[in-house]
Amino acid sequence: MTQAQTSPSIHPPSAPVQEAALVAVQQVSRIYSLGSAQVTALNNLTLEVPQGVMAALKGRSGSGKTTLLNMIGGLDQPTYGDIRLFGKFLSQMSAQEITNIRRHRIGFVFQSFAIFPAFSALENVELMLRIAGIHQGRRERAMRSLEIVGLGPGPTTAPGNYPAGSSSAWQSPEPFRPIPT
Ligand SMILES: Nc1ncnc2c1ncn2[C@@H]1O[C@H](COP(=O)(O)OP(=O)(O)OP(=O)(O)O)[C@@H](O)[C@H]1O
Ligand SMILES: [Mg+2]
Image 1 (cartoon, rainbow, N blue to C red):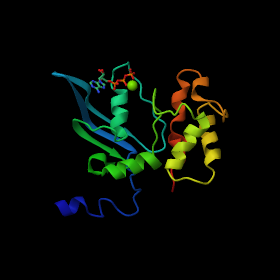
Image 2: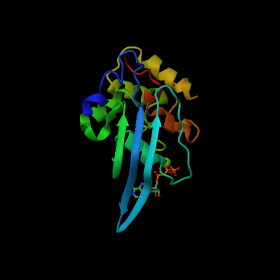
Image 3: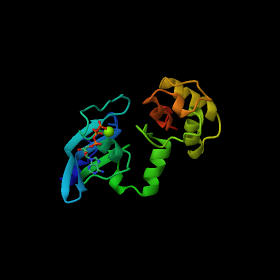
Image 4: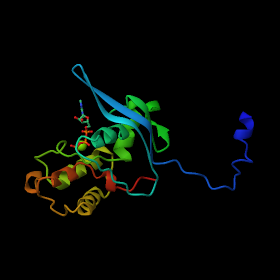
């Protein structure tokens, strides 16, 4: 029976290979402990984001958006459930693997921190590329990333000179960087 389920006759080589979802969230809950209280930030959430789509997450304040994104990025772990990123369970990855994914394949645009105020917007973005070990074309890529989010060129503009809210867009060029092949 087990053999039959994995038989090539069920998944013939000529059949299109089903690509794993980029992000697969399976029955995820996140419960924070706040003193003696328990805060259920996410309750049994399941969703998939396929490759090649642009997805947006929206919900009222406190609905758990940041909580979810933190877990998808491996910055936090679910209390229950599992998350797969690029087809692999985050719970089975080492801290180094997750760090490498964050460094090379995904990026966060934080709302209010992780900006170096003494650096220009361009330098803030370039710093991430430097950490990722990218040497060639770094400045051009950083400028392109800023332009994509409507903050370019402004190479000498310090974070405080941009409108409130826009400063968060500098911290990582990763979302806008082609994934290395
Ligand atoms: N570290 C924490 N400890 C305890 N409770 C937390 C913690 N972080 C978030 N929460 C609670 O979890 C719930 C979800 O918070 P979260 O920040 O994920 O919401 P959000 O959708 O990102 O909100 P916003 O739109 O305001 O950014 C809220 O009730 C929040 O108060
Ligand atoms: Mg939030």
